[in-house]
Amino acid sequence: MKTPMHTIQLMSHRGLPWSLPENSLTSIKKALDLGADVIEFDVRLTKDLIPIIMHDATIDRTTDGIGEVASYNFQDLQKFKITYTKTGSVDKGEPIPSLDELISLLSKYPKVTINCEIKEYQDICLDLVFKTFKTNNLLRRTVFTCFDYGVLEKLKTMSDEVMVQGFPLELMTNVPDGIDTPEQLFDYIGIKHSLATKELVSYYKSIGLITGVWVVNDTQQLSSCIAMGAEIITTDRIDIFIQARKKYYFSLKEDTYDSQ
Image 1 (cartoon, rainbow, N blue to C red):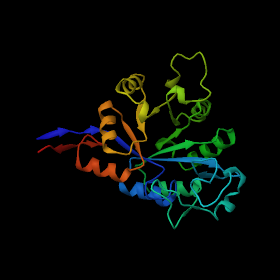
Image 2 (cartoon, rainbow, N blue to C red):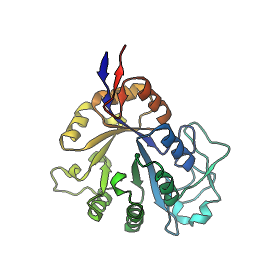
Image 3 (cartoon, rainbow, N blue to C red):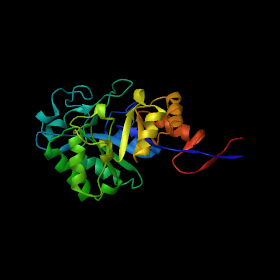
Protein backbone atom coordinates (compact mmCIF):
# COMPACT_ATOMS: atom_id res chain seq x y z
CA MET A 1 0.00 0.00 0.00
CA LYS A 2 1.36 3.41 -0.97
CA THR A 3 0.99 6.35 1.41
CA PRO A 4 1.95 9.99 0.60
CA MET A 5 5.05 11.21 2.36
CA HIS A 6 5.35 14.49 4.24
CA THR A 7 6.99 17.23 2.17
CA ILE A 8 9.88 18.74 4.12
CA GLN A 9 13.38 20.14 3.62
CA LEU A 10 16.41 19.43 5.79
CA MET A 11 18.78 22.31 6.49
CA SER A 12 22.28 21.55 7.73
CA HIS A 13 23.30 23.93 10.52
CA ARG A 14 26.92 25.09 10.01
CA GLY A 15 27.68 21.91 8.09
CA LEU A 16 27.88 18.78 10.22
CA PRO A 17 29.17 20.32 13.48
CA TRP A 18 28.25 17.26 15.53
CA SER A 19 31.38 15.49 14.36
CA LEU A 20 33.28 17.85 12.03
CA PRO A 21 34.66 21.37 12.62
CA GLU A 22 31.82 23.90 12.70
CA ASN A 23 31.43 26.10 9.60
CA SER A 24 34.48 24.53 7.93
CA LEU A 25 34.61 23.56 4.26
CA THR A 26 35.05 19.90 5.21
CA SER A 27 31.98 20.01 7.45
CA ILE A 28 29.83 21.77 4.86
CA LYS A 29 30.98 19.49 2.03
CA LYS A 30 30.08 16.44 4.10
CA ALA A 31 26.57 17.84 4.64
CA LEU A 32 26.25 18.49 0.92
CA ASP A 33 27.41 15.00 0.01
CA LEU A 34 24.99 13.45 2.51
CA GLY A 35 22.11 15.17 0.72
CA ALA A 36 21.21 18.32 2.67
CA ASP A 37 18.53 20.35 0.90
CA VAL A 38 19.69 23.64 2.44
CA ILE A 39 23.13 24.68 3.72
CA GLU A 40 23.18 27.26 6.55
CA PHE A 41 26.30 29.19 7.56
CA ASP A 42 27.33 32.49 9.16
CA VAL A 43 29.27 35.44 7.74
CA ARG A 44 31.46 38.03 9.44
CA LEU A 45 34.09 40.50 8.22
CA THR A 46 37.80 40.49 8.95
CA LYS A 47 39.81 43.65 9.66
CA ASP A 48 40.67 43.90 5.97
CA LEU A 49 36.99 43.47 5.03
CA ILE A 50 37.08 39.90 3.80
CA PRO A 51 33.80 38.03 4.43
CA ILE A 52 34.56 34.79 6.28
CA ILE A 53 32.49 31.89 7.60
CA MET A 54 32.29 32.29 11.38
CA HIS A 55 29.39 32.37 13.83
CA ASP A 56 30.91 34.14 16.84
CA ALA A 57 32.38 37.62 17.10
CA THR A 58 35.55 35.98 18.45
CA ILE A 59 37.48 32.90 17.37
CA ASP A 60 37.82 31.67 20.98
CA ARG A 61 35.11 28.99 21.02
CA THR A 62 35.62 27.34 17.66
CA THR A 63 39.35 27.63 16.93
CA ASP A 64 42.73 27.10 18.57
CA GLY A 65 43.21 30.89 18.70
CA ILE A 66 41.74 33.81 20.62
CA GLY A 67 40.59 37.31 19.76
CA GLU A 68 37.94 39.16 17.82
CA VAL A 69 37.42 38.32 14.18
CA ALA A 70 37.45 42.03 13.33
CA SER A 71 40.93 42.45 14.84
CA TYR A 72 42.58 40.09 12.33
CA ASN A 73 43.34 40.37 8.63
CA PHE A 74 42.25 37.31 6.69
CA GLN A 75 45.77 36.05 6.10
CA ASP A 76 46.54 36.31 9.82
CA LEU A 77 43.48 34.20 10.61
CA GLN A 78 44.83 31.40 8.45
CA LYS A 79 47.35 30.41 11.13
CA PHE A 80 44.44 29.26 13.32
CA LYS A 81 42.37 26.11 12.83
CA ILE A 82 38.71 25.37 13.54
CA THR A 83 38.76 22.53 16.06
CA TYR A 84 35.31 22.74 17.67
CA THR A 85 32.62 20.10 17.18
CA LYS A 86 29.49 19.45 19.28
CA THR A 87 31.11 16.30 20.62
CA GLY A 88 34.52 17.80 21.46
CA SER A 89 37.62 19.21 19.81
CA VAL A 90 39.29 17.44 16.91
CA ASP A 91 43.03 16.87 16.74
CA LYS A 92 43.37 18.07 13.17
CA GLY A 93 41.55 21.34 12.64
CA GLU A 94 40.41 23.07 9.49
CA PRO A 95 41.27 26.56 8.16
CA ILE A 96 38.69 29.33 8.57
CA PRO A 97 37.15 29.66 5.10
CA SER A 98 36.40 32.84 3.24
CA LEU A 99 32.98 33.37 1.69
CA ASP A 100 34.59 33.17 -1.74
CA GLU A 101 36.00 29.73 -0.94
CA LEU A 102 32.61 28.51 0.21
CA ILE A 103 30.90 29.94 -2.86
CA SER A 104 33.34 27.97 -5.03
CA LEU A 105 32.30 24.78 -3.21
CA LEU A 106 28.57 25.55 -3.39
CA SER A 107 28.78 26.16 -7.13
CA LYS A 108 29.36 22.41 -7.53
CA TYR A 109 25.97 21.66 -5.90
CA PRO A 110 23.53 23.70 -8.01
CA LYS A 111 20.33 22.17 -6.57
CA VAL A 112 21.09 23.06 -2.96
CA THR A 113 19.47 26.14 -1.39
CA ILE A 114 21.86 28.48 0.42
CA ASN A 115 20.99 30.08 3.77
CA CYS A 116 23.49 32.82 4.61
CA GLU A 117 23.16 34.33 8.07
CA ILE A 118 24.50 37.87 8.35
CA LYS A 119 26.20 38.32 11.73
CA GLU A 120 27.35 41.94 11.31
CA TYR A 121 24.87 44.70 10.67
CA GLN A 122 27.06 47.39 9.11
CA ASP A 123 26.28 48.50 5.57
CA ILE A 124 29.75 47.48 4.38
CA CYS A 125 29.06 43.87 5.34
CA LEU A 126 25.70 43.82 3.56
CA ASP A 127 27.19 45.42 0.46
CA LEU A 128 30.11 43.00 0.23
CA VAL A 129 28.03 39.89 0.87
CA PHE A 130 25.30 40.94 -1.56
CA LYS A 131 27.89 41.72 -4.24
CA THR A 132 29.48 38.29 -3.81
CA PHE A 133 26.19 36.46 -4.31
CA LYS A 134 25.06 38.68 -7.19
CA THR A 135 28.40 38.39 -9.02
CA ASN A 136 28.21 34.61 -8.76
CA ASN A 137 24.58 34.51 -9.94
CA LEU A 138 23.41 32.90 -6.71
CA LEU A 139 20.65 35.24 -5.57
CA ARG A 140 17.84 33.01 -6.84
CA ARG A 141 18.98 30.09 -4.69
CA THR A 142 19.98 32.09 -1.60
CA VAL A 143 18.04 33.11 1.51
CA PHE A 144 19.66 35.80 3.67
CA THR A 145 19.00 35.40 7.39
CA CYS A 146 19.46 37.92 10.18
CA PHE A 147 18.14 38.71 13.67
CA ASP A 148 18.08 42.43 12.78
CA TYR A 149 14.98 43.67 10.97
CA GLY A 150 16.77 46.68 9.47
CA VAL A 151 19.35 44.44 7.80
CA LEU A 152 16.64 42.35 6.14
CA GLU A 153 14.75 45.47 5.13
CA LYS A 154 17.82 46.88 3.39
CA LEU A 155 18.63 43.59 1.68
CA LYS A 156 15.12 43.51 0.21
CA THR A 157 15.76 46.89 -1.44
CA MET A 158 18.93 45.66 -3.17
CA SER A 159 17.23 43.37 -5.68
CA ASP A 160 13.83 41.90 -6.47
CA GLU A 161 15.54 38.51 -6.36
CA VAL A 162 16.53 38.78 -2.69
CA MET A 163 14.80 36.40 -0.28
CA VAL A 164 15.13 36.82 3.47
CA GLN A 165 14.47 34.84 6.62
CA GLY A 166 13.52 36.46 9.89
CA PHE A 167 12.37 35.17 13.25
CA PRO A 168 9.44 35.72 15.63
CA LEU A 169 9.52 39.43 16.40
CA GLU A 170 10.48 39.04 20.07
CA LEU A 171 13.83 37.67 18.86
CA MET A 172 14.43 40.47 16.35
CA THR A 173 16.12 43.84 16.84
CA ASN A 174 15.13 47.15 15.18
CA VAL A 175 11.55 46.13 14.41
CA PRO A 176 9.71 49.31 13.34
CA ASP A 177 6.57 50.50 15.07
CA GLY A 178 3.28 51.04 13.28
CA ILE A 179 3.34 48.06 10.89
CA ASP A 180 0.38 45.73 11.31
CA THR A 181 2.21 42.59 10.18
CA PRO A 182 5.93 43.33 10.00
CA GLU A 183 6.71 39.65 9.38
CA GLN A 184 5.36 40.08 5.86
CA LEU A 185 8.76 41.52 4.95
CA PHE A 186 10.09 37.97 5.29
CA ASP A 187 9.93 35.15 2.78
CA TYR A 188 10.93 32.55 5.38
CA ILE A 189 10.68 32.44 9.16
CA GLY A 190 12.66 30.33 11.60
CA ILE A 191 11.06 29.33 14.89
CA LYS A 192 13.22 28.14 17.78
CA HIS A 193 12.19 24.59 18.65
CA SER A 194 11.36 25.45 22.27
CA LEU A 195 8.92 28.12 21.04
CA ALA A 196 7.36 26.22 18.15
CA THR A 197 3.69 25.21 18.24
CA LYS A 198 1.27 24.00 15.61
CA GLU A 199 -0.73 27.22 16.02
CA LEU A 200 2.32 29.42 15.46
CA VAL A 201 3.41 27.46 12.40
CA SER A 202 -0.14 27.70 11.01
CA TYR A 203 -0.25 31.44 11.61
CA TYR A 204 2.99 32.10 9.75
CA LYS A 205 1.85 29.93 6.88
CA SER A 206 -1.41 31.88 6.75
CA ILE A 207 0.50 35.11 6.05
CA GLY A 208 2.51 33.45 3.29
CA LEU A 209 5.77 32.53 4.99
CA ILE A 210 7.79 29.36 4.46
CA THR A 211 8.11 28.08 7.99
CA GLY A 212 11.05 26.28 9.60
CA VAL A 213 12.10 25.10 13.06
CA TRP A 214 15.63 25.21 14.54
CA VAL A 215 17.77 23.49 15.89
CA VAL A 216 16.41 19.93 16.02
CA ASN A 217 18.79 17.06 16.79
CA ASP A 218 16.77 13.96 17.65
CA THR A 219 14.04 12.04 15.89
CA GLN A 220 11.44 12.58 18.61
CA GLN A 221 11.75 16.34 18.13
CA LEU A 222 11.70 15.78 14.39
CA SER A 223 8.39 13.96 14.64
CA SER A 224 6.87 16.82 16.62
CA CYS A 225 8.01 19.34 13.99
CA ILE A 226 6.46 17.28 11.22
CA ALA A 227 3.20 17.11 13.20
CA MET A 228 3.25 20.91 13.50
CA GLY A 229 3.48 21.24 9.72
CA ALA A 230 6.98 22.75 9.59
CA GLU A 231 8.38 22.90 6.07
CA ILE A 232 12.10 23.16 6.93
CA ILE A 233 13.98 21.50 9.79
CA THR A 234 17.39 22.86 10.78
CA THR A 235 19.73 20.32 12.34
CA ASP A 236 23.31 19.65 13.47
CA ARG A 237 22.63 15.97 12.67
CA ILE A 238 22.03 16.02 8.95
CA ASP A 239 23.58 12.53 8.84
CA ILE A 240 20.87 11.00 11.05
CA PHE A 241 17.99 12.97 9.55
CA ILE A 242 18.90 12.09 5.95
CA GLN A 243 18.88 8.43 6.92
CA ALA A 244 15.55 8.86 8.70
CA ARG A 245 14.05 10.41 5.60
CA LYS A 246 15.23 7.52 3.46
CA LYS A 247 14.01 4.88 5.88
CA TYR A 248 10.75 6.21 7.26
CA TYR A 249 8.06 8.67 6.46
CA PHE A 250 9.01 11.99 4.99
CA SER A 251 10.57 13.36 1.84
CA LEU A 252 11.50 16.59 0.12
CA LYS A 253 9.46 15.65 -2.93
CA GLU A 254 5.97 14.24 -3.30
CA ASP A 255 7.24 10.67 -3.30
CA THR A 256 5.57 7.67 -1.73
CA TYR A 257 6.69 4.79 0.39
CA ASP A 258 5.50 1.25 0.91
CA SER A 259 3.88 1.08 4.32
CA GLN A 260 3.93 -2.73 4.35
